[in-house]
Image (tube, rainbow, N blue to C red; front, top):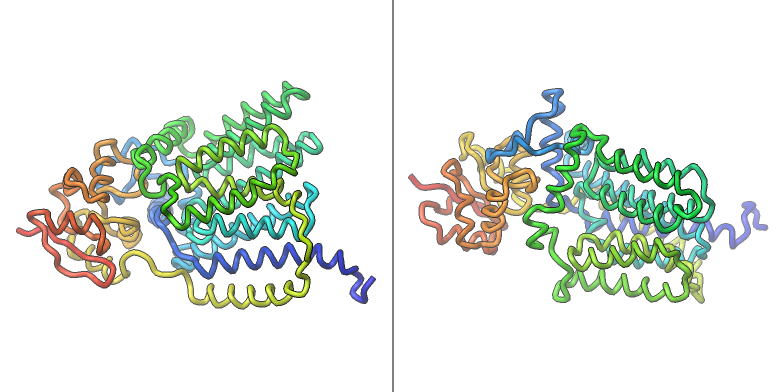
Length: 452
């Protein structure tokens, strides 16, 4: 025993997971930015907080959305609180907290599955590098970043020692459903475990938990209309077309290649890891989902951490680098938080100019700038959440983002001002669109205004 009361192996068991967590969080902080599918929640949460009621549809959008079931009120209020208190830095801190929870839970889960500290740490680093865009970019997915590992850890603990603690999955699904649509994925994973692992020993319990968790999905302000919300998320045109965040895995995209390499690096370890049948089925399903939409890669990598870590037996502990890495991570994390997230989209002054020029009319904006307009108090024609709009309006907006001539249908008569990112197909379309002319902008963004 050392003077501190801990033997070197015991100290290593503590320091390695903590250091790995700091490294991953610091890396996410260093590359942090606020992405699409974030600020519209803050904008809607602000309306809900001001009115003390849930509005019908999307109040800052002019195109019809009255039939949209709003299931994510809790997420909207939380995003509003983060934005109102600390601006985009608040969203960044929320994202980093989610990453810290994920890394902590995944590391502990891997250790309880029998992995060595160094093996768990290496598996976590590989997964974090492969999932870096999901960890660094703040968006509503942050809630699932934290909750998906919690569910997986709960199910693995139940696979080891079955107990009535499986009922904890029900309130977990209910909370998750109020925060992010990936709760539907969590429910599917839970059902896979119940059907392929628990059902043989406890049929009635499995049926009760399965039915209760399915009902918990609807424990949102939308109640039974939550089913329609999930249907809209899964069937929106962006998902069907594989556009934007729904884009498929691509061998020509560097970040996708990193995700593939990380998944392979962890996946090859499964040959020496005895994963149960329910995990294999979920791994296969998530692999298919990731190929269909690369945004799902983070869930696959999270799931692979524990079984891969069991099979990793590093020959060197690198114990001497642990304090250096920890110190460097703390310094990096502090500097990154002080700096705040990297700026994206249009500058606040340009967004304010566009809203002023619109004189109350809706602004048509590309990228995440539609959300910036909404958060700044302006109105948009169509934008996020895309599933809130009719199929025709979704198609027109997505065509416009792709620079297709059919996208001119998004230029409704009410639209007087347009914001586009420079050098995009959307700008090319606007340059060739009669009746609109460039009237200003900055290095990254151009403003177009309807003539006459």
